Image (cartoon, rainbow over all chains, first blue to last red):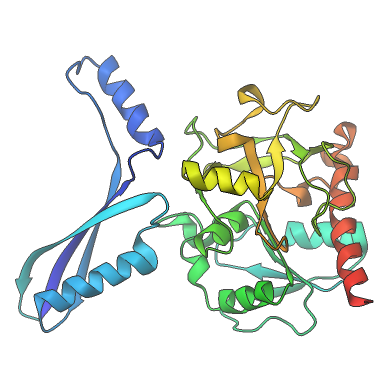
Length: 86
Length: 240
C-alpha cells in the first residue's frame, strides 16, 4: 500500500530565519500591519510503499533523520496525508 | 604531496583548485568523481571544492555529504589525513558532521562575490603554519549560504577549543560587525575539527593565486603561501 506522508521542515527557534524576516518586513510595508511573524519552511511529500501506517511513519522519520532535516538548525513534523491502494 | 580533488555533480571550483595547486606547487592533483568509493592510493590532502553540488537542492552540501566517496573521505580524516573544504566543500563537511555547525543564508539574502580579508587565528594547524598569528589574508568570497551558525553553548565550546582558524576582519585586523560580510556568528570564516586535520572555510584560497586577479592586494602571495604550507606539512609528515 502506498502511504502519502507530508513533512514540514522549519528552522528552529533561535536560528535566524532571514527569509522569514525579509518577507515579514515586506508584508508590513505593504500595509498588512497585523502580521507579527513569518517563518519560511519546506514542505516535502513522500510516497512510501509500506504494509502499515506505523511502518510508513517510521520510515519517514528515518528519512528525516538521515537526510531531509539537519537537526542542528531545523525541526520537523511528519503527517500521513491519506492512503490509497498501490 | 598528493592531492585528490573530489568532483560532485555541480562542483565548479574543482579545476580552480587544480590550477592553484599546479601554479603554486607544480603538482598535478587527482580528480576523483563522487561515485568512487576509494581515494587514489597515497592521497595526502583531500579537497572538497566550491560550487553547487547537486544544485544546492534541499540544503547546500546535504546530498554531496551522502555521496559514495564521502565514506573514504571520512576514513581518510579519521586516520589523520588532511581534508580541506572550500565554500560548498565547507558546507559538505558540516553536513557530513566532519565539522560542527551549519551554514545559513547570508543575512543580506544576497549572493556575495567580492574580495575579502580574513584574520589568521591559529598558526599551529597543518593549513596555517606559513602564516603569522593575526596575519590578514586576502581571499575572495563567493557564496549565498555563508553565515556560520552553531547553537550558543556549542559555539562557546568551539571557541574554547580554539577551533576557529579564520575570522572575517578589516585590513587592520578588527573583527567586528562592519567587517563581517555575511553575518557569520563571531565573524567565523573557517574552522578545524578538534584534531586539526579537517579545515572548512568559506573564502577561496584557490582564487588568490593569479597575478591578474588581485596581486595588488597581496592575494597572490597569500594563496601561494596557503598551498605551500599544506604541502610542507604533508611532506614533512611523510618524511617522519
